[in-house]
Amino acid sequence: MIPKRQFERTCVFLKPDTVQRSLIGEIVNRLERTGLKLIALKMVNADEKRLVEHYGKPDDWYLEKGTKRIRLMQEAGKTVDPNKLPIEYGKDIIRGVVRYMQSSPMIAMVWEGNQAVAVVKKLVGSTDPTASDVGTIRGDYQLDSYALSDAEERGIRNLIHCSDHPDEAAREISIWFSPEDLHDYRHINEAILVDVNFDGTTE
Image: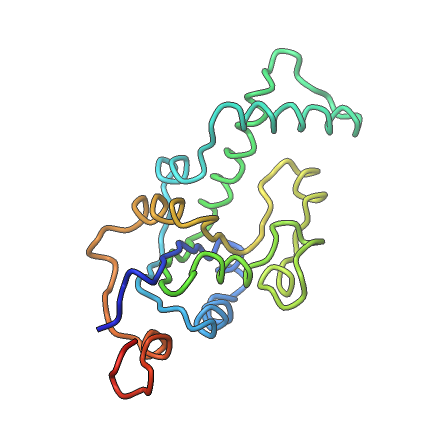
């Protein structure tokens, strides 16, 4: 029996731009090749309530981002509404992400395996296209940029979401999946990690 305590779970979304660009199979294939086990997958028309719960931030985050957005707007010569608080400019960022995530169905998945969160984060790459290495999903396929998305005042279209750490993964999974959605089955890649001689004898 495989000792489950060794394995993490991570939550992954293939975002609307992945669906629209017909990259679902390509990206799932790349995730499979890491050796992680897919334990849940479904197509979702995301509702606003769950998206806000998923992407929502504390007020200090909104204030920081809103203050930065105002500064960038001023530097670009754009009009800043004097009656709009910085925190509301920060909330506009998440509002833009929510609108984007509702523009098309997305694919929601859960992957399980040894250090699943770190493995997927490395494969996905940075959210900044200029910092995403060649060979990562975003580095190889991303068309958008922060410069363009900021100019259009919308969320960046960066193909994929993955959890930042195991605790965050658990929270995200609970938003999008019921316990019945998560499949428990034996996968050969798990045996490779703990089966000494590939004969059923575990370490």
